[in-house]
Every structure is written in C-alpha cells, then in structure tokens.
Length: 310
Image (cartoon, rainbow, N blue to C red):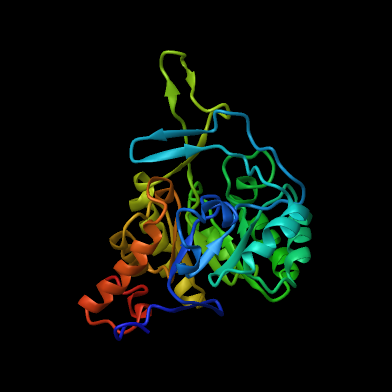
C-alpha cells in the first residue's frame, strides 16, 4: 500500500508486490542485468529458459532489429539444469521478487525432469512452461500449436510441479488461441502467459537471403502489441475469466500506458521484454506509472482494473 493505492497482486497464489514481471530470456538469470536494474523492485522475475542439458542454441546471426521491434532466433541457448542449480539458484534466492523458472525441452519427460528437480526449491515460486518457442526444431512451438499435446504436457508438468504455480506460455501462431488456452487450463494450468513471439523473417536484399542464420525468428516489441492485447482480451473473455485463472500479458510493453492496456484487457500481471534492451530500467518506470494512474483515477487497488475494459 502506497499513497492509498495497493498495487500488489495475488497471482495464482503467489503474492506479488506489483504486477510487473520480466519476460523470459530478456534479463538472463538476474545477475546479468544487476548493473542496470534493481530486480528487487519487480513483482516477478522469469528466468531465461532452462533445459535438462546445456544448449548452444542456433548459429549466428540470431538477432536482427526491425521496424518497431526485433527478431530473435536464439534457440533456447542456456547453461542447463545442473549449472543453473549450482551457479544461478543461490543468486535468485536473494531476490525479493517472486522467481518463476521458464522450462523448455524436446520431450515431455525433459520438461518433467527439470521441474521435478526444482519443485522443492524454496527460492522458486513457480514455473513458466515454454511450449511456444518458434526457433527450435524439437519441442517448443511443436507442442504449443497442438491442443492435445498442450493438454498432455500441461498434465505432466502439473504433476511434476510439486504444488508450485504452473504458468503455460501460449503461442500466437495458431488459428484460435482460445483452443490451446482451454487445453492448458483443462490440463491443470494455474495461469496463462501470452503471447510469445510471432514467427517472422527479415531479408537482406543485396545477399538475397534471410538475415538470420535460422532463416526465421520470433518477432517481439511494439510491433506486436496491438495483436497481443487483442489475444489477451480474447483469452480472458472466452477462457480465463470463467476458469478463474490469471493471465500474464506480454508483447511490446514499454510504458505504463501499455501495461495498463493489457490489464484492462484482462491481464492480472504484465511482462516486459524487448523494451529492457532499449531502456534496462524501464520496468521501474512502468511500476511507478501504474501507481500514478491508479492515484489519478482514484482506484484503491490495481486489481480493480483487471478486465475492466468497457
């Protein structure tokens, strides 16, 4: 409670001091961004993806800037489960922000194995199930676009989560996102995270070939924000509201106004990703901006805004 405004959020049972997260993959494991942002000001922190074994990711170039955004094809490069436990978990345990671990894999058992290893760690509030990455040949989006597989992997993950919050990250690259959202909810998801990046391509016309070595990448940044807001609102109205589960809204958020639009559309919390590369400390400004908006509108609790779109 600050100046009569309460911006804390109960996110599927995890108590957040404010509704602002980092988006997975944009702030590493917390220590990488420590020189630029005080991670402790955040409500939640989502780690870079963790897989059972280390991954080198895709060949370079694997990032390219585009109009109002960027494409990435990192390919889930990460240090692997064991090094994460040894090197990064002790650092994350010091944070006051709620820590969610983004989990990825090539098989259902890969996901479950990572979560079983981490489910008893007190430093971890929950998991974000990455079944929607467009830049890997196995796992990722191949799980996230098939409702039956979404349901199957969510059920396995729920069993492996040990009672911690299970958030499923949805791909926008489907005919109807409410179908996969419902499959995740039916599988036991405690929360939904949307949206992941849109598959896209940038071409070097002089070389007459794609700029990215992977050919395609995931488009993020302000370019996708209006589409992301629409999809959050659609899933909120058709799935999440009746199911009583929260949504983490993300896609091109860089200001408090952007964040509030997602909350009005139905998100209980928001994630900031690409904007941190432009202005690493923008999350703190978004938090303060949300508080000031509530003050100006004489709103005592930020939760009053969730799904309040007229």
